[in-house]
Image (cartoon, rainbow, N blue to C red; front, side, top):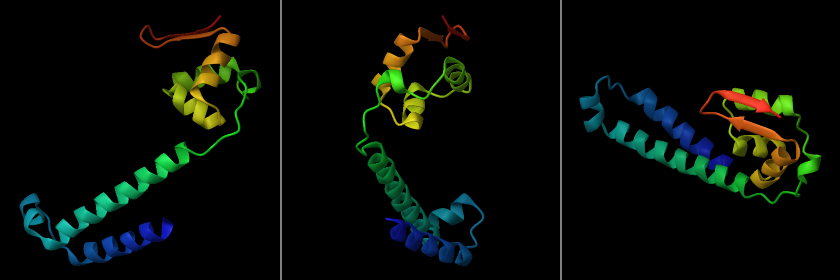
Amino acid sequence: MLDKRVAILKKVDALTNKCNCETAKEMEKCPNCKQLTKYGHELLALVNSRIRLNASIDRVPISSSKLPLTKVKYLKLKQAGKTDRYIADMLGASCGALQNWKKLNHVEVRIRGKRLKAK
């Protein structure tokens, strides 16, 4: 997959060196710009497929009691705007394991009221 991305990026580089379009109207008619758009869509598809592949990697289940997480660290991540899904992925755990960890550790987060607390 990396080879495909590198090949596309080389083609994009070659086309951007050829293209002198400055306005949107020029870009609509330019064959180089149309080709760049096509390559952009191909790259996006490759990246999205890579994300789906990484998300589906089989993980060894981590029990909620063994998550390497403290209440303080969890609350700091939430204050930074991180989602539970992001935090679980970061820890290599499932969202369910993180949910169970929150119950075990009496962690309650209220985003709407801008109040984060751990009981």
